[in-house]
Picture 1 (cartoon, rainbow, N blue to C red):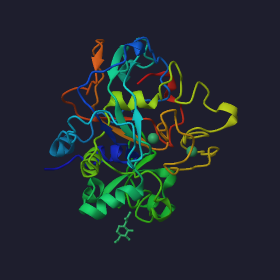
Picture 2 (spheres, rainbow, N blue to C red; picture 1 turned 120 degrees about the vertical axis):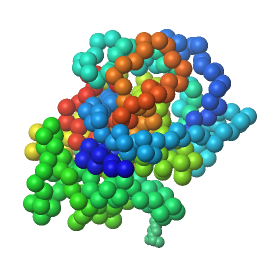
Picture 3 (cartoon, rainbow, N blue to C red; picture 1 turned 60 degrees about the horizontal axis):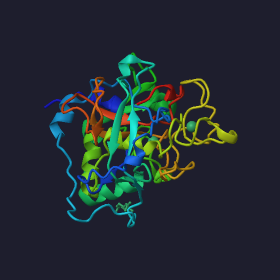
Picture 4 (cartoon, protein in one colour; picture 1 turned 45 degrees about the vertical axis):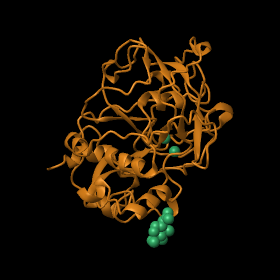
Amino acid sequence: MAAPRLLLGTVLACLTLRLCLAVCPETGAVDPGLGGEEAQGSCGCSTSRGNRAPGEAASRKYSREVHLPQQPGNGPKDKDEGRQMASIPAGVFTMGTDEPAIQQDGEWPARKIHINHFFMDLYEVSNREFEKFVNATGYLTEAERFGDSFVFEGMLSEQVKSEIHQAVAAAPWWLPVKGADWKHPDGPDSNIVDRMDHPVLHVSWNDAVAFCTWAGKRLPTEAEWEYSCRGGLENRLFPWGNKLHPNGQHYANIWQGDFPTSNTREDGYKGTAPVTAFPPNSYGLYNIVGNAWEWTSDWWSISHSADTAQNPKGPLTGTDRVKKGGSYMCHKWPAHTTA
Ligand SMILES: *[C@@H]1O[C@H](CO)[C@@H](O)[C@H](O)[C@H]1NC(C)=O
Ligand SMILES: [Ca+2]
Ligand SMILES: [Ca+2]
């Protein structure tokens, strides 16, 4: 079966994955005291737009639900147990908005979401962690099998750039690069030797699911991701508060300067940063905003019910998966929209 390589490539290009592990899935023990909690601010926890069509065939090809190993009777655990995960308490938050800045983003209506207790990885999955998975399983990513992936032109060598004669009309700074994959994130003449602690890139949703299965975890739902991104704060634009640069400090790896031509790297990073860089949010999650986009398990959709929901898992079908949080290439802060 032919996979839509070009389209899939646009998704492969700047993504990582963060895993979560739900516990005690059916307790429904939501603290009623949290019922009034409203998180209207988006905390910069934005959803990706675009890339609506990619990877349908490929997604179906490998599509399978990832089920957690059941742990009956264990109940919520508050200890990390060496998994480098944060315990995210059960609670209620408001997802979406009734006043979306961009209707097509599917960020409306505002809906009350109950979330059970679960664990979330503290960090984006690093190259080192991904290499452990590949070493243990021999897994070949989709980018490796397809032979190419999309790379931001600003990261390419002149040599590689000169060999490319094709670009995406809507986003001409993304170039299809032969030999770009997680081990060669900026094209065939690049490597990850000095970036083992940076987020793994060029990982498709199917790759992400394979990694999760190996790790005994699963991808977070969009609701879980967004809830944990907010770090328990209400009405904040960012996970750390309302200012993009409190006290002149950078709290995320995004883009400073005129995109895509000038990257002033005031936050210290031209490309990705180590997964441990920058202060964590109040749940202890690092780089939940910025650095690399993160996969969730939900299908992308622009229509949502206004009903209150318990641990929603998103639409039953779709053509693309939801990714969250932006990347080092995010230049216009998407915080005015809730996602
Ligand atoms: C993966 O295997 C290679 C070759 O044996 C080894 O050099 C490398 O350290 C391993 N990576 C990790 C993260 O364990
Ligand atoms: Ca940066
Ligand atoms: Ca991130």
